[in-house]
Image 1 (cartoon, one colour):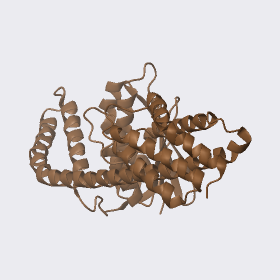
Image 2: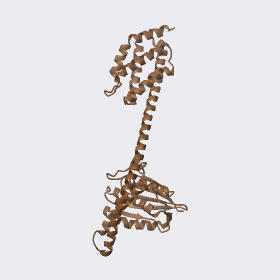
Image 3: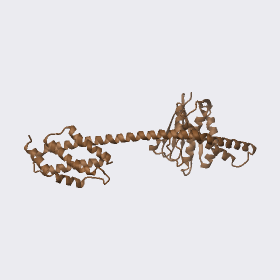
Image 4: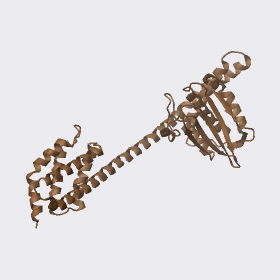
Length: 369
């Protein structure tokens, strides 16, 4: 049986339900695009009923959860910001408590009911926000699964394209490179032949990148013993026109003592890709443009530090630059650094990137044996 105070309070709330609803709706946040906006008033009245019920007798978690979960689902479907949702709930709490103060019941007698109402709203908010968050997290997870699947499909398509077109590109390209060599032998002083030869080799290198991506086993296993100094020395001759064109100075401390047993062609591809990217980035630098290649040698491994004084790579991009299709270049493919990472890992090594306003460095660790 209801006590005198609780009966008077419930009677007062029943008589003033329209006043509460009107006052709450005037201040509540409802978007014009909210297709559940007609339900907002119904939910407010339902919450008002829960307040009256909890004054009669505290509600169970199940009774509170039914309305809280329903409202959370509607808010997700309406794509409502969680902060707007919490604001509307707390606004309802505030309006109801103000009405309770107007009941002419003394504060001393009203206090326990105010605590019960506050507890009701706390539980309602917790359950509703938890449900809202669970649904949003599931949506995000489903979206990520879809993105991952799409990503795999793109890799498959790229592999199919590369397998189909690479030989069509390679055949005329190989012929052109061969004829350029013949012309160089017959007329070694003919102008611009070295530039044409360099550009054809560069094109051949880019095609090789697609060929690597198209293969499931990505990397070859042919390995040999070679001098790291000789590898870089040969590579510097190959990129000399690009260094000259970009007004870039390159300095290396690599010496003859470093001998690797590895796939020479693949490592050459890694270093070429990084240095050509450096030259590209340094185009945005006014003044001195520098590339440095240093190393730290230990008994079991060599750590190579390839650096440039170009623009900083934002920290948020560092973690993704080795992912396939990531690129900041307008016409870039975004597969170069991805291939570099795969090659280094296949050699039981590690590659990472660090960037500051002073310099950007790629750190490559390779085993000596």
